[in-house]
Amino acid sequence: MNAPWKSGGPGGRDQFAAYMCDEASLDVLRPIALEMGWQPEKCNKGGLRNAVQSLSITASPNILLVDLSESGDPLNDINALAEVCEPGTVVIAVGQVNDVRLYRDLLASGIQDYLLKPLSPGTVRDTLAQAQAVFSAPRGHEPGAAKSHLSTAVIGTRGGVGASTLATSLAWLFSADEKLPTALLDLDIHFGTGALCLDLEPGRGLTDAIENPSRIDGLFIERAMIRANDNLAILSAEAPIGTPLMTDGAAFVQLEEEFRQAFEMTVIDLPRNMLINFPQLLANVNVVVLVVELTLASARDTIRMLSWLKAHAPHARVLVVANKIQPSLAEITKADFEASIETPVQIAIPYDLKAASMAAKLGQTFADTNRTNRAGAAIRDLSRLILEETGEARSAPGGPAAKPSLLGKLDLKAFMGKAAAKKETAPR
Ligand SMILES: Nc1ncnc2c1ncn2[C@@H]1O[C@H](COP(=O)(O)OP(=O)(O)OP(=O)(O)O)[C@@H](O)[C@H]1O
Ligand SMILES: [Mg+2]
Image 1: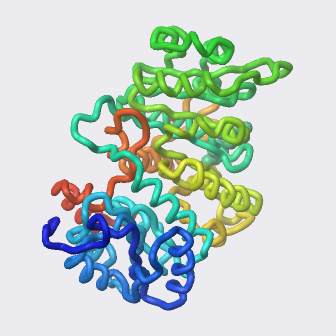
Image 2 (image 1 turned 45 degrees about the horizontal axis):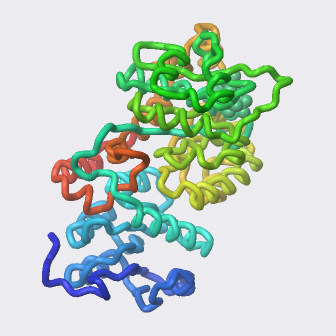
Image 3 (image 1 turned 120 degrees about the vertical axis):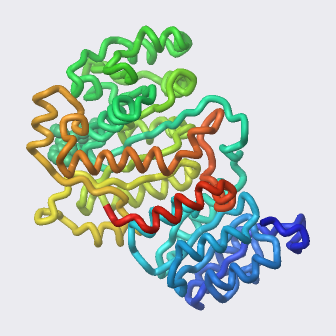
């Protein structure tokens, strides 16, 4: 696949190339390429097919932006592109189809991101910066990778959107259904519901950890965490309301580190204010679940948080999940919300009062109680998406992995089969 006779720029590979179908996109792209220190001539006219043709005779760039607009079968054509790309190339697709299923399939086939036309300079700039970070990050799927671990942070864009409901549900599904040793870290120190929703007492574990970060080690974890099932341990608190949080965040980072050694999965219920105070908490997180509601205020804060995440946690895969959906009562429609945040909502969970009250009554997580209704099924879809989309990251030895390159995945013949099968699967 790697033709040794291919020519390329200095060092064999260019830093960047783009293949765009229309002048308007090229006009947006060229000045940004220049800003990033790349040659604007590398922004070529022509879409995916041109890219495949050119790259079959020249070395592929580190970062490749490719327009799918003129492609009748984008997934198939992307596979053709993978045939001519070098390992490690970070590919960003551009298109005019706003379809979540296509977006997901593209991500699953190794594409780093999918941008909708017309291109907005801010989004292009952020995406290219992120691609650069991903390209320079250590690869996560080297052979001999030590212990696997996947860390997911669940963040609500507004209060009460259901972030804790999803964090506890995901932790339950990973531990009970997938049988993966899982830690749930509830960082809502004063008002956390991680233990409450499982009908457990939070204990003093998290409070002790905050007061004495130097004591945090494997033994401490074993003693301080509350067991919720054979595979799930929780660290949560109900700190007195009169006691302000006194920490520099070192305890939380240390806990994350210990969890990486002791568990396969970490789920962090991360309130927004904790994100602002302790951004370092996201340094080793693989997946961020951004829980949104379909309101104007949530749209504004989703935009702000997506942009923050792109800048501060470019390694993390961000999944936008809309909860408590009531189509007839939505302040803004899902389509308008998606257009405004310029990102598809990957999972939509219906509002289901009966489901929530049943979970509360039984002292179980929402997903555990609701195994047959649509809300429960959507949360299970989310858990699968997390496990699926970051399958490669779980093999990273000491932290999050870059998203696998197109070719990195394609090297695995099995993946080719999976991509083809996925294409034929009927929408859920
Ligand atoms: N899909 C849903 N349908 C109906 N009720 C729901 C749904 N999801 C969550 N809830 C309910 O909404 C309430 C708030 O949920 P939760 O505590 O998870 O939100 P949160 O985002 O963590 O809030 P906070 O900002 O206080 O941390 C809970 O009573 C929960 O049972
Ligand atoms: Mg909460």
